Image (cartoon, rainbow, N blue to C red; front, side, top):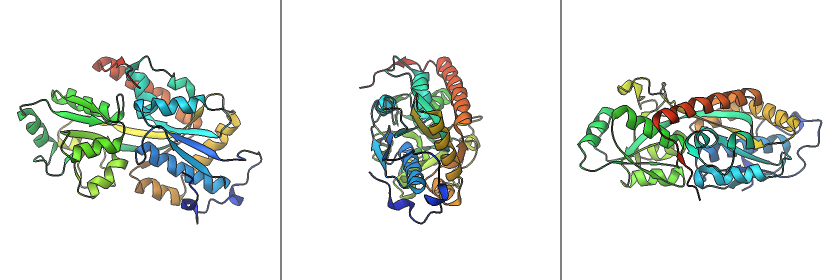
Length: 324
């Protein structure tokens, strides 16, 4: 998909972003390791619009979902390191899989270089719209009274969706069966249809189904209320002390890309997404603006990998990779 018209009318014109080098001189491809409509997909399309607005070059979004994001990341890592293939990523793809899965076919932390962080977002605890529970305590009581083992869904093994649900299980003592889906949309539809008891899912792909009364949001997982769902309380406000989970997203490039191109893209993304036009679009998509340049993003990613690796080890959530 070429992102061309969405950038029309923005202040970020090619003339105002004149540059010295020849890059880019042709189409840029952004590989998204998840399905259309997912949080990483939405972030990739925002950055695609920004790149088009600056460079006047078409940007193609290529969705390569599957295997918890590994398929797309492998494709990106194998691309020629010339700056014309980029990829989206974040906590759920670049940190949690290597922290929770043994035997991955790609060394994610070294195969992909952080360019810039774009945003952070919360997960929402959702149930079907006619679920009898309207609060987290009511949900816990309902699940404990169930005569069968409840099901939760996620958008893949090692995703932030799964890790948040596992944290909820640990904190409540509830036992769940995990149903991994290929993407966020499928897990949300499964929840809306009553195939799943609960789902902790990234807010951006969840928002439309909550607003459309197809899902009921009982809580958000951050320490703060999401501005998009101001009436939905946090987990902490409902008795889950210290329950604070946020996810984050950014842009990456294959290893060995020229540091000058990384620096150029990092500056463009951080500066461009800080403009009022893109700040409004980031918020409208369900994100919180959170920008870090390449150096800051590299350090932050390393710290997050250390944090979640320790959590996974302590919780016993380290398994052999079973991707396809």
